[in-house]
Image (cartoon, rainbow over all chains, first blue to last red; front, top):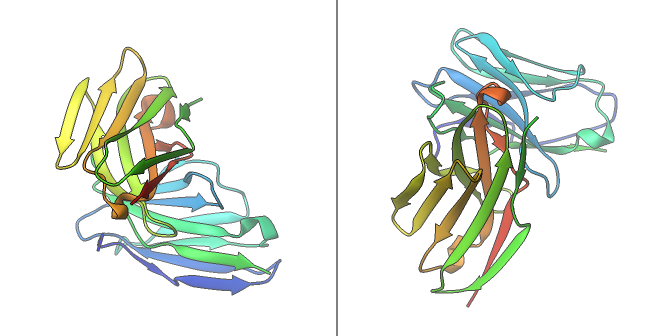
Length: 113
Length: 111
C-alpha cells in the first residue's frame, strides 16, 4: 500500500461529458503529480502541485485542469471528453524533493463510450 | 527535449539474471529512477541513481554512467512474480525536475 488514495477506481462516461478524479497524497507528502497512461504507453506527465500551488505543467490539454486544496488532496478535472481520453490516470505524491521517489496510487481507469 | 530508450520486451527463465538497459538524452541531468508496474497496477519505485555506479537493493541492482547517458536495471534470481513492466525515468533541470518516463520494458519470466 503506497498510502496514496485515488477515487474512483473506474469511471465510464460518454463523449462530451465532464469528470473529476480525486487523489489523497501519502501522509506528509506536499507534492502531487498527475499522469496519463494509455494502452501500452509510458506515463505521460500532466501537472504537478506543491503545497497548493502549481509547480510544473506537462502535456496537459486545455480541456483538463487540476487543483490542490489546503488539505493537500488534489482533483483532476477532465471536460469535453473524447474517445482518446480513455486511459489510466495515476496520481503520485512525494515530499517534493528532487531525489525522492514518487508513490503512486492505484489509478482511475477512465473509459469513454 | 528529453528522450529515453529501453527495449520493449525481455524474456528470461526463472532463476536467471536479466539486465534492462536505458539510454537517455536530456539537458541538466539529475538522476535516473526505475519503477515496476504489474499489469494495470500502480507503478512502484525500485531504485534511484544520482551518481555513477551501482546501487543494490536485494535481488535488484541499478547502474548509472552519466558520461554514457546510460543505465540499467539488473534483476537476479528471477521469480515468476517479477513478470511486469519496468520503466526508467530521468529527472533533469531541462524537464523541470519532473521524472520523464520511458515507454517501459515488458519482462516475461518463464518457468
